Image (cartoon, rainbow, N blue to C red; front, top):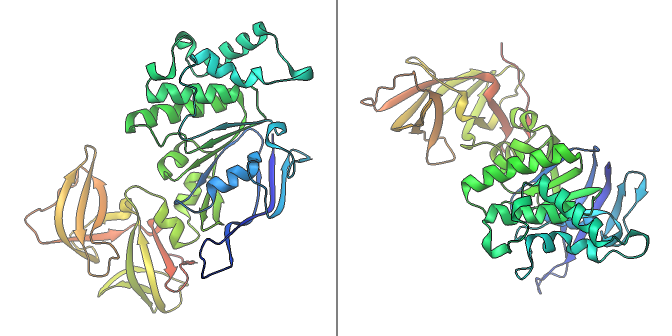
Length: 367
């Protein structure tokens, strides 16, 4: 099911008694979600991603704009008629019901031509349970399940109605690290198997990048960038997107472009042809550093962290916005830990320039 959002906007009254204005939670959001894809809505808390999800499923009405499911305008359609499956962060299972009863519960409310017999409800419940690999736990109650199993029950309950669209609102937030990894792999497997158009809301960029076909990065209700995860990571449109994606995060330095050369402090780091003379923010991905004895970028060596196949060199620089510069290099490199200084060259495609005033990306070419 293709989903089209046209200039979607949601405003709330301000709770500030001194300011009688409005808070814009979603601001002029236009996007076409392709049929059968998994889309990650990504951004910090308060950016408007959950509000967007609530608008799509009908729990909230937009202040402006339109929502289409395929060719159908569903902007004013009640939630129960949209054919949406919704999975919440807190599972929302009935503790006194078994897994089977929790899954079949949405089917018991069907009326008219959609009403099912008990045999049909049980068959669909077991079909949904098989999708999430829970068919052997159907007689247990939620309190007897792990957090990951409870989340899978919630997903099965959303799927049992064969929804046109599946909406997942922070579904992994209550799980520990290992369960998060396992469950997000399950979500991706289920989505590929069912081919249901799915929107996955998260503030965790690792989750969004690992399972999404496309990601939408939001800030303060405004869409910053839309694209395939790797494309957005490799070509951020502004400083916010560059800082939000990546673990460890991008290293941001105060720099100056002068006569086609980027200077970080006194170090002439890289020739940046086409960039005008100006003060800039220079972002360097952790994997963008090359350990070199005569490298142009000088940093004060703090410590080395062994990560197995890689080494994290933790250093500092007076022009860095953060207290530490993190550089990821191959473990085969030998770092002289007795030295007070470490020197790097920079991979040009891992360095980005941003305008100091606006954070907008500055294009340049490398000779």
